[in-house]
Figure 1 (cartoon, rainbow, N blue to C red):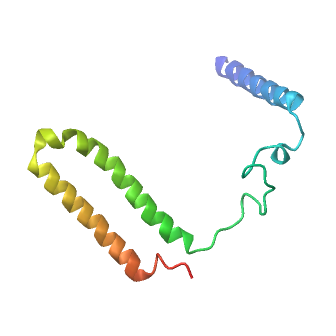
Figure 2 (figure 1 turned 90 degrees about the vertical axis):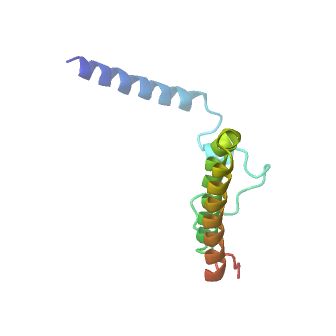
Figure 3 (figure 1 turned 60 degrees about the vertical axis):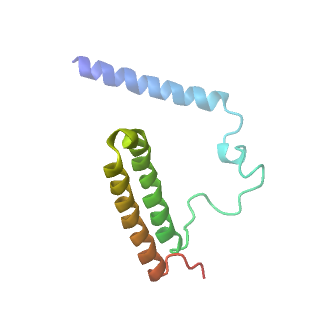
Length: 112
């Protein structure tokens, strides 16, 4: 029984907050009043599709972004562990460079 009371309170709270937001909003269509590209009008819809050549570049970027996540803790412990940690990091970077060479060979960096 108490579960239904909690669900009811949540539904009432969510509905109340939604109605409060609608009551104090500046415009009924919030997309028209939000700042976008320094005040410029959008030329395309926010859910427009991107060309397929952007996806391999995005994956390469994410690979190096995740690499940085591994390098921060490595930088903290490399002084304590010594040369073994440096060798492990260079092996890791070698694997990533091999991935970059492969992506380059496959044409992931060609824009036209």
